Image (tube, rainbow, N blue to C red; front, side):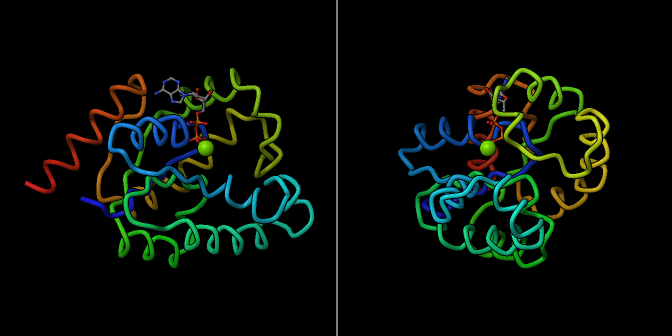
Length: 173
Ligand code: ADP
Ligand code: MG
């Protein structure tokens, strides 16, 4: 299989961490849409949102998704990538879409422990725990709608990679 593999899910579910490990396991390239945006614009997510609002960020995110799509590539997507119909359809048509799911309290604990958390703008200005529960409740159905595969992301990164590989090979059998 050389179709691109898209990892979707909330902030902190492990798209970047697991994506790197999955790419290594498969001998694939790795791309991250947030990282691509940062390189293409020279601005962080926070900078773009401050200058152009979330709508401007979302337009650039769609362009980034298309730009990084290539065969034999694991693609970590931004947490809100599934919000646009266009993005969901594009991912479904061009590759396999894998949803890394985790409970909100697990995600909050990871973000609290991560030094990058301060660089990620909150969507609503609420405390992280409340916002996470609310954002997940809004997006859960879209993650499920977009995904070909769903994997429990509350296991260790190695176990998540194994679960993804198993799910992909079962789908091929
Ligand atoms: P995302 O790219 O989905 O926002 P990251 O890969 O950046 O998530 O992970 C967010 C934080 O959670 C990081 O500090 C990372 O080390 C940690 N993390 C990611 N996956 C796991 C995992 N399966 N188990 C424990 N910690 C994890
Ligand atoms: Mg990431």
